[in-house]
Amino acid sequence: MVRVNKMMIIALLAVFLLVFAGCASLGNLGGGGEASSYGGGTNYVKTSTPAPAYAYDSSSGTSGQSAGSGMVIKTANAVVEVQAGTLEDKYARLKDRITSLGGQISSADYYETDSSKNYNIVMKVKPADFESLSGIFRSLGTVKSMNSNVQDVGEQYTDLEIRISNLQKQRESLLALLDRNGTLSDVLAVENELNRVQTQIEIYQSQKLDLDRRIGMSTVAVNLYEEAPAVDKNVLLPIKEVGNIFLGALGFAILAISAIAGFGIPVAIALGVLYLAYLKFFKKKDASREAKEKKK
View 1: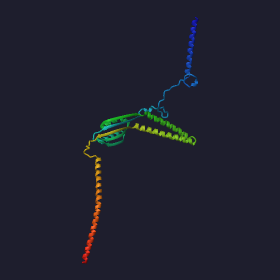
View 2 (view 1 turned 180 degrees about the vertical axis):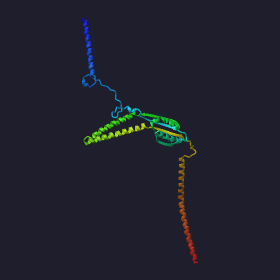
View 3 (view 1 turned 60 degrees about the horizontal axis):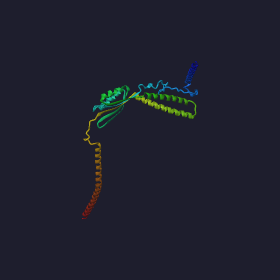
View 4 (view 1 turned 45 degrees about the vertical axis):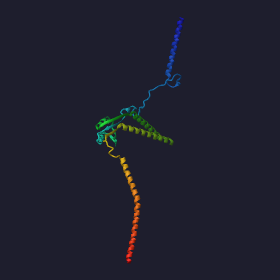
């Protein structure tokens, strides 16, 4: 009986210790998660889900994800071979077709090589007409190659909008500070900061405008060419060789004239002197003969 009582007492003590330990641990959990000034024990730090890259802007009513849909820049480049002798006509047809779709030719550079005549064309088309370009090119000739690229700029566009909006709010706050009375140094500091903010706004607005243009009109580069007829280079002398022959002949002529002039001028002077002396001598002889005849 005594042994049973001892066993019961030990069991009750064990249960009491377990209950006490559980209450102590619950107390620590209830008081944790804040600063350590609440007493000893383990600190439990609250964790949260990371915020999205673009926060909600209450002034514009848009979130960072809203502008991603449809904010793409489309570009393409192609090489199209047309039938020989039709390059000018095909270029005119392409220009008319792009213009009729509301696009435009930004630049067109013509050049020739030994084997081809080419137009390098850069044009702008509406994104809705982007997919129809392959059909237009095939109607002109043989499409040798065509590559297209689609760039999603939704996040970049939204980032610019948020930056502009935040800077505009900062500008409003700075303008309000200027209306308050302050020292000259305070006013100058506010004006310098205002100029910096305004400059940054204009930079971001320029970048946003560039994106608007590139999104609104797709850029396409085309090399339109035709094979040129082969030319036998052995028939025609190269221009460089003809020029060398001409320059050589001209130099020889100048040297010949100089040689003739250098030899002929002294000889001509000598002959002229002799001729004058001859005339003078014979004039004297004739004069003396006439004088003798008069005396007779």
